[in-house]
Image (cartoon, rainbow, N blue to C red; front, side):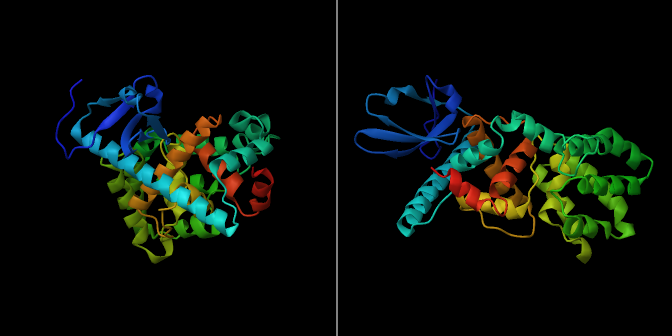
Length: 326
């Protein structure tokens, strides 16, 4: 296969025998070896004599640049993590890695996301006929029914904007990811004159065809128009995370900030949601998903990713992490 000879265009490679590793960029070379950053998150070094296994591949220029840019960022994160580990070791501090988190999670749920206790306590809310707020499955089913595209289109078509607004508040209220005092009540203070615009903007956020950053930015802008409904991370992300749990993530900053300290050290925290910052959190969570799959934990959806972060990064688990630290 021919590859574009433009010297300014990044070259992507694929391992001839391990295509499941994904594409890669060359990130280091010396006299006897070459090091590549792969899409599965790993950096691999090959000795001279094995270079031919890394074959250049041809991809459209725009996609090539995007993939190379993401791989370059992943490589930078690897370097930053190594420096963090070295500095912590010299200072006698503990750094908790994803492997440590997996060990802690399996200590509580030996069979991972398919563990019977996990399913009962988290996915199905403990049984007994009463669905708790922590029950992810009940929250998913409720949001996906009341905020389906068919339901929203029918309500908006009937000019029943308030029903859309109330359905959004109900979805936010049915999960413990959102706080009643800081996330739900502020949304309830939305002025009546903004309710129609809220309904249409929410429908666009969830099902619109414009680029996602524009739709998310429009939703945030609407909430920012009123001082008492300034968006929080849960207010901005939980609804879409429930409706589209395969593609979006619910963001709770207290634990996502802790996760980022190791997994995405370049991510600086801001209490104000933005499209750019959400994409950074989303990228970190996708990276975590790959690492969990590599560690034998197969999530059902992205709410399992949220729950993993919460169960291993929430306040009070530091002592538990120390107990499983290798």
